[in-house]
Image (tube, rainbow, N blue to C red; front, side):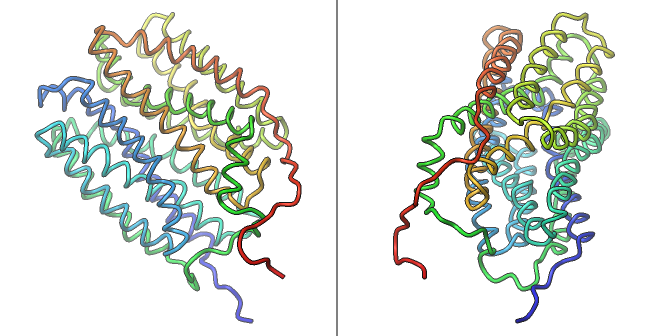
Length: 410
């Protein structure tokens, strides 16, 4: 039998990390464009926020299908298509003159592009190409790369806006994101024949979905992840404008977003390490509780650049630190046979929360002239998420004999 050929670990990690850096780094800076675009076009903040909300929802929806396509045709083609969609979406974001076109390009196109260029696709390559004993470490490194991308790219985006104006800055990024294409070439998998070899399955897709959605702990996990999306996307998109409304310079906002990305590297890694020693449900409950405390202290303290930086560092530690324990719980309860699919549905809940957070931020600002209501909603939701994660049962689900449809296998 011919041995399965693999890409080198260094090649997979380098190309994968750079792709995630581009894709996640660019999206984390979109809040810097809220005021320049709305002021230039004469639009409300709700218009911009709605497009960002559609983007997050589209990312969640298309993410399920992007993973399926990557399994069927290989990650290279999906990444290449995602890069092209990203460039088209950024160009459309720059050139759109109507709110409909802006929502379609900034929302739908970029959302679909993110589904095809971020963690799910890169993790698929890592899972197939990196030996099992190093796989968890490799996936953690890819997650850290996305965080470092925010730290690296947000100041670059702020500089591009200052140097070239908001419109040309987007066109520069549209050209730059095409670099994902050559990087994706480095992830072309040898001996890839259609679908990837997965774990042995004792359930059909329908049976797995009925089991998961009927299981209380899965429902609670999805509810908590909804809150995660609400909080991080509201803060990521609206905080620059919130700070500017209170007289702070755009450089403070750029630095704050960069600090979130930097400290998220450490927070994500720490959550992964703690997940091997503590109950993951307790880690998640603690993360959401600490987010609510951090937001409350931020609102109570005098608003200065240093209070912003302290808040950004604290939120950075808690930003994507929910990702490792959340996905680990899904795998621990249900096994790995349908992990990508079930993880996709949990992430979709996250993106519904993202939609609500970013859209309500713009809607309530336009109605009240303030972000205060959404800040307090974020605090309340954090407390809610801490409560619902605490009773999650992490033990593997106990199944009786599962009757498969179709002919029996010998």
